[in-house]
Figure 1 (tube, helix red, strand yellow):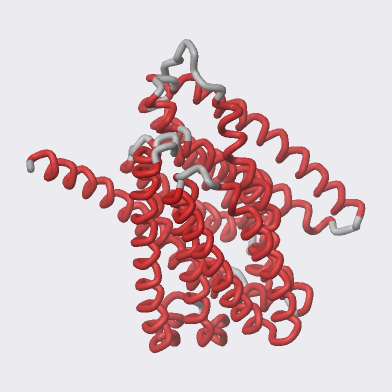
Figure 2 (cartoon, rainbow, N blue to C red):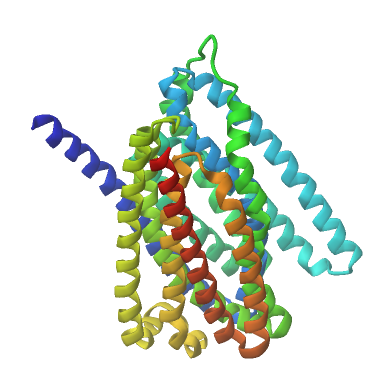
Length: 431
């Protein structure tokens, strides 16, 4: 009984830190929307949103996949007493990732120069630099979360939106409200957080590394696991960025700006709530499955992910109802007046984010069981459909069309993840 109570207290402490970190991060993001929309008109805010799609691209095809692989293999490395070999592999992958981002950024900047779009060069460079440092933060967060250093992760997750906001707002006041200035503020903010992150990382993990005599080739293991994420990353980026670029192509940067506010207020918080649960459960489930060869351990993890999915849908339903009733009042509090015309779309953006978050909850089981490759077709096909829906919606109905295109995409993605989770679970039982 005492063992159970101690375990419960430990999990409660960890969960409290996760909730605290995500709460502070959400508050910083919401306040950031309020302050930056007051300092920047919708057109400039739209340019910033388009620039951030560059950072999303790097996150989807390079840093995000690498972070997933790094996080997944920390527990097996600890079990095999080869944290040193594991960290050496992480360092090699980070160097390769940085070199790849440099080459991509060089190509993009030269293309903009040749195309005569010199006004976009400054924000593109700042966006690529932001993506590198943000990726480093993501990887260190992943390792520390896998090590269940919850307080450290919570501290830095909470710090980052506030650091970006305060530095960006300060630079805008000093140098003017341009998208390049705001993006530079984002870069400096994430660098400040990274400095603090590294100090804690070195004290808690890197300084206590040990290398096994006959350890695994972690470089290969991380690469094999991360490969599918990178394979579908370009397609998922296209889906994530196509809403803004479709509006920019068929409409104006003003509409991109008001849509970006909808996304940050509607899609982002509901996904953050689910990510909070994923962040708490991932290291626990990865430890329980180990190398994912025990069917009984895998089945237990699958049941937990289904419970998380049901919880995500419940949160989505309640959030949709509340925002449907009070969307006008919420926009008056969190957004400058210039953006209030789209408040009626707020609950539908919540629904889109909730359906996608529920699908992501199901992927946690697949990732824990080392079944990332079977998600490739679903990720690519739904992403391509999402791109098509976004451009069609933007062309026919503008901002409203893109929002409802997102609902359709998220619904399809959720349904496909349900099918994959059920089919893989049945196969494992039969095996």
